[in-house]
Image (cartoon, rainbow, N blue to C red; front, side, top):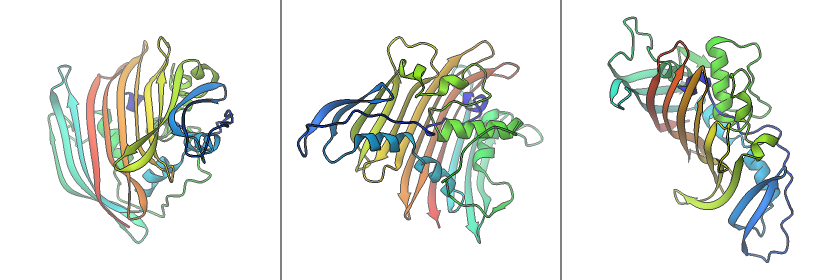
Length: 316
């Protein structure tokens, strides 16, 4: 899965200087069709209330968001129960192997550990030694399950950054996936042919992508939705669409989704990911994660897979 090969998680922050056209001449409580710029790239702002809103600061906050990453770090300092489903598909789209589990994360005394409440598998999801036969299973386990007991964690994100320097193997892949997942729109080193193509804000990307900010309502909450899509006829792109929904009042991420696809000589992939988040017990946490992907890497069997993780029963 490109998620696996791309070695995880899209980037969406980091030193993006925002030069916005000053929005003037609008009366209080007025609405307007507006365009502004991100370093000379046009951003469409249809039906956005422009009075009492500093558009420049708003866009800067959106581009440099940390609430999404913090929400996932918060999973390290709370207890919860997750319902997990992974399906491995054949070329006809039928399920040839699967995994289902109910896992309880227990957080006590500054430490967390997992308790398997239910677990079933079909087909060849595991080999005879109990190891994962498919990359999606291994990656899902490494990213979301605890081995043994882990202590002393926090959900502080200030001053933290991702990087692959000094890392190799599965640790490097995990770091790349974190970059891809938590900071969408930034270059990711070490991914052949496409690392530079993941940047959504460099001078090349601005010629290929449209940027749009709109108002919407999400689960009864007033929100902004920021969408990035390729311009008609754009070539050499990897990100087919990325959208993020932000709470109007806090600018916390409420949902993020993105689609990626690419074909190269060594590999190809077509991946879709979506994460839903909610405020529970005063904390922003991810509650639903969905993935579907079809990918092939040289010397690896093609993997077609879906997974859904639903998180409930959060406890501080």
